[in-house]
Image (cartoon, rainbow, N blue to C red; front, top):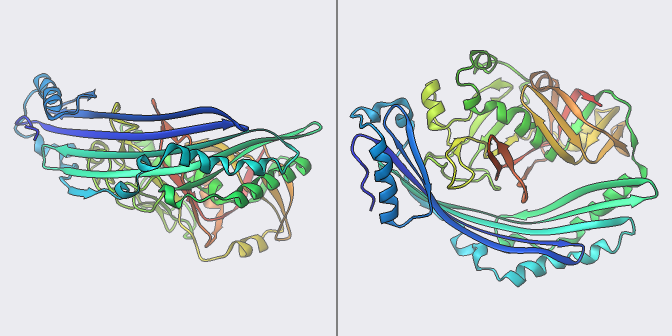
Length: 447
């Protein structure tokens, strides 16, 4: 049991992480690794500044030594518990080990490789397929958080999935895209050759027949993955409250209660809605409640750590996250998505005489302005998804585009990337989920 120094706020975040990565290039094994790390991040706060250290000495004696060394650097403060940051740290006590019985740690390595390899024959069905790669990846992370306020929570998260990436070519035409199959446990990750076959067929059709689309403003329907990237890159990052500290202009732009979109639009960031963003507690031990960023078209909230919540006199939202035990926390997203509506996709399409459907996306970026680079896009003619078109980039002002969203579908998907993740400052590839319904935007710039 740790002995926390008096007149200081202290906490310890202990992390045990397991990961498998298997990669093939065509049918040749390129990489097969299993990695397990164990460490802790220790913090001490005296009301004026934080003292922090990362350590792999996670025995009680090792943690106590690190804690005491940090406390020696701090200045004890009898009133530290009344500091706004410390008041935003809640002493939850709970155990939520949801994957202990279904941990990917217990699955044989050859079983994981066999699941991946059983998809390989599908690639041979397509003569236009050139180079292709296939990945299997799983991760299971167990965390425990203890604090001098009495917090003691232990929880885990897990994700497992397959990724298939393929290049296509015919004469001078070339194309590249990727597809994923993802679950929260190995038992739920079934072989899905039909999904891979459908993906390869769509890519082949796109590569053979796509023609450039003339630049201009179009009515656009975004698929759930495009919707999710827009919500994450263009709105989620702007909602992270550390960007607002010391910036009165951004606080005014982001004034809660401001109407920014039609009532049909609501954007949520949650730690309780499935996918890899499903985390019962953040890395400061606060509960990951469901937070509306926009509700009914109105700015409704932002994403907080204890520090940003204290500075802005708002409630913490459970968004303090770190890439791993080597890093301190900052406000980060979990699962960010646009809520579904009540209209089927067919009804959204029927209202578009001439437009563009964005099916898949290479990447996106944004804060006040955004860009989305589509992979596959299709022309909409009189309510029907028709011929493929090549689109370089969608772009626009975030607030302006929010006002152009006319409808959202009842269809909904939440996407958990099995490779990569969210990047912010020096912490890249943080696991996050994103998604939403199909979204109709009446006036979007296409280049």
